Length: 491
Ligand SMILES: [Zn+2]
Image 1 (cartoon, rainbow, N blue to C red):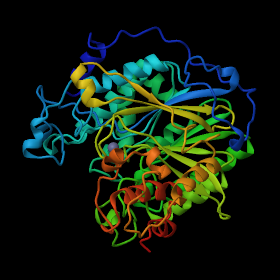
Image 2: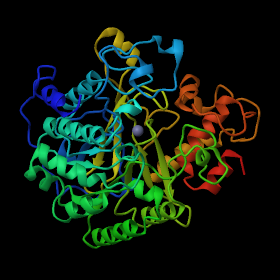
Image 3: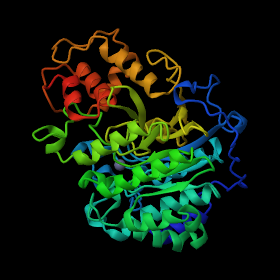
C-alpha cells in the first residue's frame, strides 16, 4: 500500500475526525532557570493539557521505530507478513486488528496510536520522529521506493494530525538502502517531504542552515523556541565512521549555544554503547554483539560524543534515542566520574525485538533548562486489544515508586537509583539465582525478564534472573566496554 493507498487512508473515514487544532502553547521565556539537579518530578499524577505553561513545563512526543508495514496481507500470518524468527505451527496465531506480537504494528495499530496521541496531548511543543519507519516486510518488497514511502507516510501522519507542531526527524538504520548504510536518504526524504507537505512546511521544519545541513549530512540543528534548540544526529554515520566532521560541528553548535545562554535537546536513532536485551553486549572483538553485527558505534565517535555530552551537560542535559525498542537509559559521566547527562531510550510501537507491549512516550521537560522532569509511556496489551477489538491504553507511573524512588530525573538521581538496585547482591559470577526480595525484581518482574533479555549469550552458568539484572542495569550505568564488562563480571 504505498502512497496512493496511504492518501485514501489519510483522507478516508477510517480516520478519527480531525479536530480543530489549537495553536501550540507559547514558550514562556521568563520561566525559571532551575538547575537540572533541582528540577523535581511534578507531584501531580500525569496531567497533560492542564500542566500550565506558567510552570515552565512543556511536553513533547517521541515516536520511534514504528516500522510501518504498508504491504500487510488482508489475512496476515506472521510467517508471510514480517521477517519474524517464528516458524511452522507458531504461525497459527493470526494477526488481529492491531497487529501481531511478533510483527510490526498493523495499519489499525498506528492509526490508534495517532488518535491516542491527539487525545492525550494534541498540542505538544514539538514531536521527535526517531526513525526506523519501514516494516520488517518480506525481502522481496524491500526497495528504495518502499523505504521512502514509509518515511513520507509517517511524516504525513504526524504533520497532518499535529498541524503547526514542529517535527524533528532523524534517520534510523532501517531507513537507508542498502540497509544500515551511509546512503544519503535524507536528500530523498527532503524532496519527498516537499512534494507531500509543500515548500513552506519544509522551510519551517528545517529553517535556515538546518536545511543545508540536513540535505548534505543528515544532521542539523534548529530552534524550537527562543531558548531551546533541537539537534538531530546522523547515528548511522557515527556507527560506521569516526564522525569527526559531525562531532566538530556539534562542538561548535554547543559552544555557540553556551555563549548565547541557550539550551538544547539532542535526538538520534542508534544509541551508543551496549544494548540492554542481551547479556554479552560488548562491542569489542570476539563478544556476541560484535559477532552478531550489532549496531555498535565506532569507538572514536562514541568516546567523542560522550566527552561532548559530559562537557556540555549544562547546555544539553538529555538526549533521546530509540532502536532497541524497549525503554532504558544511559548515564554519562565526566572525567571525575560525576554523572552529568542522561540519554533516554524510548519504547517503540513495534511489539517485537524484544516482545513487549506497543508504546509511545510523552516527555515533560523544563522549557528553560531543556531537562526532562517526567515521562509517561502509553502502552497496551496487544493480545487483549486484538481480542476486544479496541485498545485500552495504559499509563504507568513507576518513577516515584520503590525501588526507583526518584525525587528528580537528574543524572545523579538516576545513577544512584540504578546503583542501589545493582549493588543489592552484585555478584556477577555467582551461580546462585537472585533472591525474591531483590529490589530489581520489583522494578522488572521475572516474567518481563524472560522476554526482555531475549538473546542468549555469555556465560550460561549465570542463572536467568541474575543475567537479566546485569544485562539491564550494567548498560544503564556503563556505556564504555571496560567498565561495562567489569559490571557483568566477564573481564
Ligand atoms: Zn527499529
